[in-house]
Length: 312
Image (cartoon, rainbow, N blue to C red; front, side, top):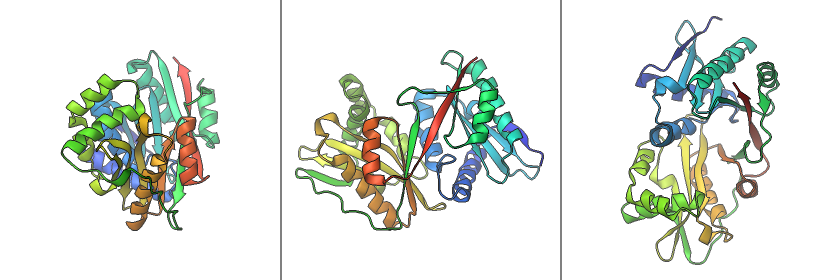
């Protein structure tokens, strides 16, 4: 079947890509062989406007059938590219074209020197062969590959731990939102207190996250310490079309670690997702510490998203 490639054109494409990702998730038996729709939303409403700051015309490429059905989408997060393909339309020729498109675009416009990275499933032999022919090599650096944890929610969940001195519940507005902004930095950049203060003083970025279509306050879970500070957090996203959930971000402030708070907020999020009818939940980890936590809560089921890179 002949496919036509084009760049993103207008807001209607955003909504069409969202539906494409939802259907592909179902067709892939609820495995993260493509982006969860929450990944697109998180990039659209937070990552791109606050960090990459690129027009979607520069970062989203669509392949369509003659009937305008989306067959594939290439998403660019400089210096990486993420191919998303409808399983009914996948061919080696389409894979070749998507890789060539990513390579050409990033080699010309990428900000990270001339490094081009393509992220693929570790078991995808077809992509591995094509990338090798194009001169890409698998990245072996520690912490570069993403472990994509998944857990079925159709069985029972363990009870969340009761941790003295902390309350596990959804995020509130007002000053607590500012505390959440402060904790967000400490959870990922523990030594940067100035960054944390700036984050708290300018919460507009979090309002952007709250504007995302899948955002729900009752799934924005926090662990609140006795002094009112946010000690740990886990934001869950529920897609009622594919009946899947996605956890992003998840972190604990360093001063409150090793108390079981990360496990507690994740389990509360999973419990709420299950109550809504969610069948499978996902969370991605890069570090040994994060993956140890996720394996302990999510179980052994996972896929690996591996980066392959080329210096052009």
